[in-house]
Image (cartoon, rainbow, N blue to C red; front, side, top):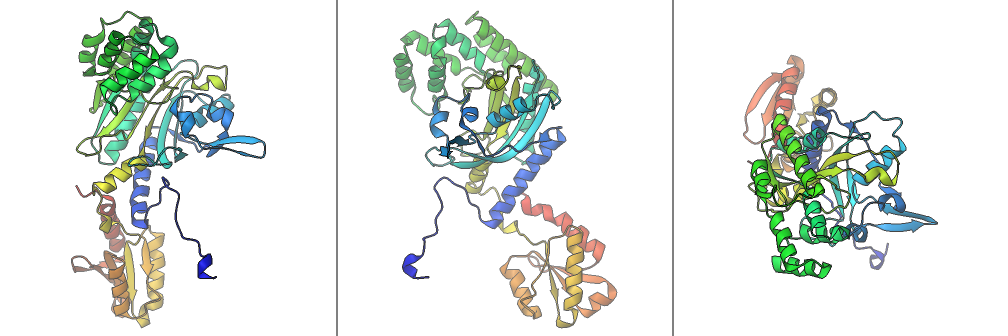
Length: 445
């Protein structure tokens, strides 16, 4: 092909692409989270990336509508999924007569958002979701279980996280008392931005919506309430007798009591937590890394009473959690949390001589059958060239297979980092390599 016709290789902004060693580490994190989901009795689900627009946009609104990738193919109007929750509501509504409730599902997959790419913000990202869907009713035990599950995911990754918990009904009730129930969506959008904009700007935006100076200040002050549940309750319980406000505080107390039974240790109650999605109706929570320079949320979730109402007349309340694993991994890479030199696609290189080449291939195959990622550098025939290739690919262990080793069944396992060599039989080799493998996925700290 003429050089002038060559296409410059490039990828779209905001779309993720990792180098192989990074991908290995990332996949390891996904596996750990999946094991947590399974251990807590959640069932797997995989919904399509594309959905009918009428289904995906049924309960979005606000900024979400602006960030959805929407297009047509022929007469079909479709969207790429923005999150994994709305497709879940569609699925549950379609199959409600076949499912057992409460229905507990998990899904790990990509979602797509047409927002401006920046640090911590991507157009293509993975989410690790788990949800509990009820039939007609759903106890606050489910809220506590999802928060507990969220904490367990970070425990499995070896990360300390602070989980901030609130209930949207508290703010919604106060907004009702101020007489602006019909403007609650716009008000929530402003309050959700308080961590990113000056208070003066928020006050100005609330006044533009119609709130008084006093009402705006009271509302912003309410969002700054945080602490233990008792501290929060003592601080706000006398502020309003609005029915929605009181109900939100009661639900938050129930969730708090159940969390104590689950043994959660990372929860703080903070009324600034709102979550951007319109479908949240009660409990909401977000997670933040401790001991990190990154201050944004790395996941969260909440209660949605009415999400399925656009698809079914049957009431199916739900609550869920999501780990923003793409953003989290990007932060961990930037903070050198991982030792990439330890990540390798090869557990062990089988190094042979001319007369033991075939025996080495047999041994490599047997190691693979026993779960060892073994490799043979068959294009590098000399012993010296094979050792050089092992060094170049940063293989930690080589298994030297000479004539004596083949006869005795004891092989020389060499640690290429330390230079230490030990003689082991086949079963001992397998055990040694499996015991050592986990270190490749351990963080620096």
